[in-house]
Image (cartoon, rainbow, N blue to C red; front, side, top):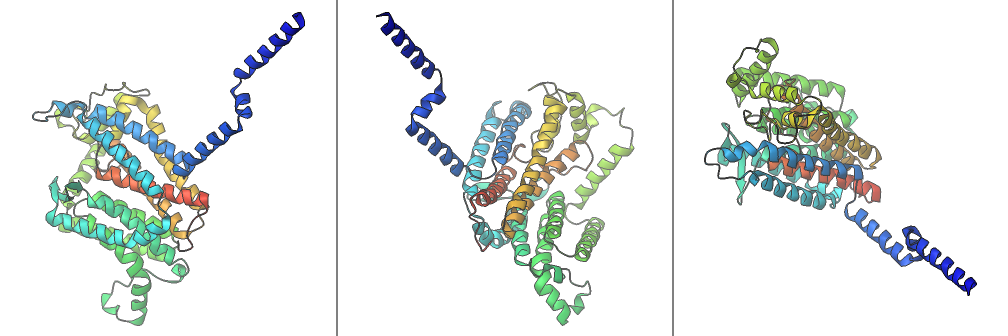
Amino acid sequence: MAEQQDINYDDYVKRHHNEQMPADDVAMRPDLMARESGFTEGVKRLFGGDKVLWVIVVALMVISLLVVYSSTAKMAYMPNSGSSTTAFLRKQLFMLAACVVIIFVVHRINSDVFRRLAKPVFWISLGLTLAAYFVGVKTNDAARWINIMGFQFQPSEMLKVGTIMYLARALADKQSVVRNIRIVPSLKFWTWRTPKQRRIIKEGAMPLFFPIILSCAIIIPAHTSSALLVGALSLVMLYIGRVKWADLFRIVGLAVAGFALLMLLGLGRSETAEGRLSTWWKLWTENRTEVMAKDLTDTERSMIAIHNGGIMGRGAGQSAVRVEMTHPESDYAFAFFVEEYGIVLSMILIALYVWVFFRAIEIFDKCPKKFPSMLSLGLAMMITSQALLHIMVTVNIFPETGQTLPMISRGGSSLLFTAVSLGMILSVSRQTEEGTHSDEA
């Protein structure tokens, strides 16, 4: 009897031990292992592409909610605002939810679809940006917004994405001959009828050079900094696409001359640009220590906010400068973030944007096709460079631009088209992992 009791006790210990070791239970249940494995594979297939990039997107969205909720608190107390302290948070949450849907949908689309859509998207966005000057909604004395079926958006944001898509396709199509052709015709336009110049215009200028000129020329009257950003990104993409150095230098020279002429003639928003350049220069050269607080510029307030933040920040909701700044939730989101969360977390935020670029470089290296690889790198450069430009404005390294902080600043158009860009980058990454890139790309 005692021997039987010992055996039962040993069986009990073994059973109890197995209950405490889930791994053993799983090993005893192959059907459970198969279900878990199938679920994991299903999630991977559903959310394909670069996993690190997905994590970065989620992190930026969380930061966006923190920034918008705290920075817009003052707006609820403005006269006739009709808003609660959470109204702007709810709107931002809705926009971010829409961004998640957009990223998911776009990342499931194959890159050959983007290739076919590149030219239509470019020309449609070009037309909408031009139409905004005639039927658009004016903001800050500039027609930038257009209303389509009740949805108001900034077509220049669409044009930035469209230009990169167009250039990625044009450069991919020209890779076999791009080192042997010129893309900038002679400035002596009366010679354009000669066989040599006609060949340059047909093979190089029409597919590569003229679209960049059109894009920048249409954006610049409403948003000078966006035009400069598009021009700079286009130049880098031409370099990546192996365009001759001589043509790159010609484009830089023409761009500088064109911008100087624009400023001299006072066209577009040159007066605004000149005023911002003047303010930027004064902040570097004049002693502003005795200026009254009410006379401070937003750039000065942003620098004060960064100074107040220190290493660890003042804490969530403790910003003092947000009440005095015009747009702490958009144009100066980074300065506001530093004030509340400190330099340490702000360095992590900067690292996230730089990380987007480095992840795109890895996607570019692994992708076997020309168009999707250049598309992903170009879009990542747009996101990272816009973020760094925004940050440089807040510390007065660069004059005020009005560029938002991608995926963080409050807004609609910038958020949505940044989401589209991230979706396309993830699409390229997903197809590279799956090996499903089309031969057409």
